[in-house]
Image 1: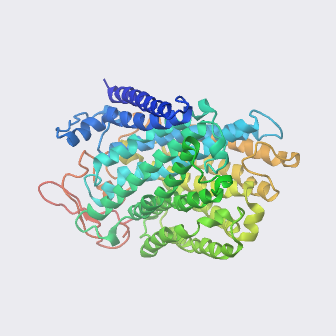
Image 2: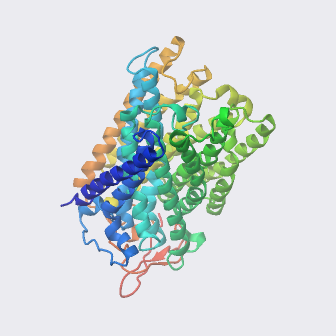
Image 3: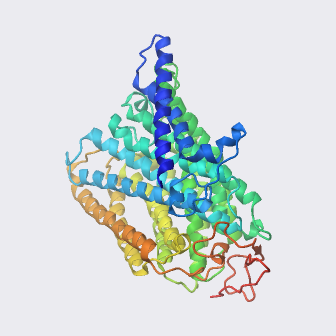
Length: 614
């Protein structure tokens, strides 16, 4: 039965939840407390249920049997059923991530449409203030999860071992674990409306996040679990890149996408634990009566904001660094030029990693932070724009005088540059204390954040998706539909979010279901544009689904690119390469006479392949 692991996982997860919830109820009864208080039962039950889910879906047979001295069971399924199992093949895990987060992105987009319906006119249109805040909060965390995990979990899992000439990641079973704790996260988030929702936003600031509906606890558990996946994934990528590079794949020959994943993994491993502590503290406030953030009992609500943003501003770079890597990869191959300022870009990536830990407090300029801290954090925030600008200029330098091949992925990469320029320029206003105080919590912030994450990250996801689609599926997509999707999405995206800068300057507050009547026109315009933006994704889904099923068979290297993932079949075989490849030069030396990036791994002897010089 194809779905047997999922059925077994759900069954053991339910049993685990009942055992854990019963244990919590029993302990509370012995302590003289209400045994069936919902949130303590949910928290303990979830921990046991998560363990049961993992054991049932495949952790027991693949891994945990060894803990008891038993031989692990080998899964001999190599067809479509492996995508529904605890499979350790990095390519399968990459596809699992990509499909999962594509669905989550579409669900998050539908919530955004509901919000824009409410904001079409002043007063109540569809939802009341509480319902709007719940929808806004759920939309926020779903899309943040998409931004964090689609490239880091999806593209990186599928491609990093291929790009460095490895057979798999360093810890394949840990890699599978990092994915299979994601489905419970999605279930928890989608179940929050059944428990009253959570209206504290994705930031979950106390005291509201401590006293609101039980749906907040489901959110906190989901975010905490997602953080565990991020930590495990970051550690695995670092170990893989450091230890499993093919012979000749020196640090100076790494594809820029691999460097971007390495930099993001450093942040993921070191920073995520801090937000996990903050979330755990709020859970303890809700279920155990602690007082970390209760000022009446000696706590400090601002403590949470420091902990949260010490992770969450570096987390912006967990999102955007891999996006930079995708875009630079695409720009270099479709410009048929060497990547401009490669070493400077690597240095910029590593500088961003370091500086990202010194800018968190600009989120607290209006929260009562000491005045003497404003200047140093304003300076560090401005400083991080320098390495970010280096990366942006490297993209421009790469396409300058290049022989541009305007395929769908190239168009999305160019769209990224256009959108990110607007996001970067408007970010300067929010980095400076005087303008930030004026613009804080307005739609100027909404527009800036979306130009950075959707205009940047999501456009990069589209560029990478179209670029690597032939390698992942073995099929070619309809390029005309791809270009239609690009132009439709680019135009409607800018029509939706550019007016929000003006609305923010006029004082329109974010996270509020209503607005002054004089802003009715701009909101109606943005809402109508957003509906057309949402419709553009119908083209994407149709093109990808139909092409995956019936598209023309893809060649091993349809783009005539130099990097290693294109020097094997599409899709790659189980162990990626017939034999270990030998790396001999830069992956971006287009136009350099005699340049060869690698000798392909061919059993029985190596055969040098001259790559297209373009």
